[in-house]
Length: 230
Image (tube, rainbow, N blue to C red; front, side):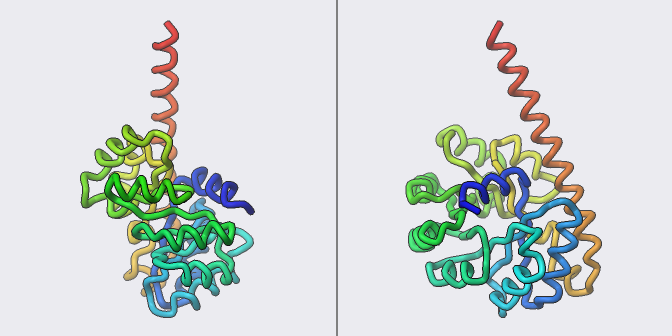
């Protein structure tokens, strides 16, 4: 699958659930619960101990049914190892030109982290498929996304950091093509006690909220187009 096809599927899903755990068994069960909730995309954070053991287990168990990416990637070597594990996309928390370059060399979709306008421009110019705005909550939330979209209408933004059920629709309406969600779906405590069914419920609720926000966006554009044609 090409990086463009991968990004297209991520945008269609609209949500990138991220899991962070050192327990491979918990990770595979969490991914299955999220898949049952209707999101065939997962990001496995490399910020935990035994992260590559977890990533390899997730790919082995769900690589045929779920689009799997590596998150919290900070350098080219992690990109290389993630590619060997079988991921289709890379997510960085901040901008790393070497991580973007290696991702492109290996044919992986890459969502480069950024926050300031300067970082957004650097990430976009590097060839990243999308810019991950992180952490969104620290700089004004959805209003900040909307402001950046006004300045950079051709850049695809993924909102991440403090995004959950109560505000995900705001980010979609602000122009984010997708949202990154961590503990709002798969929190560490629930994962530890093994009640993975909760993740399915949370996933469905987030999907519905994003769906409604996208419908609102489509209706708003239609109304605007009709008004302009008169």
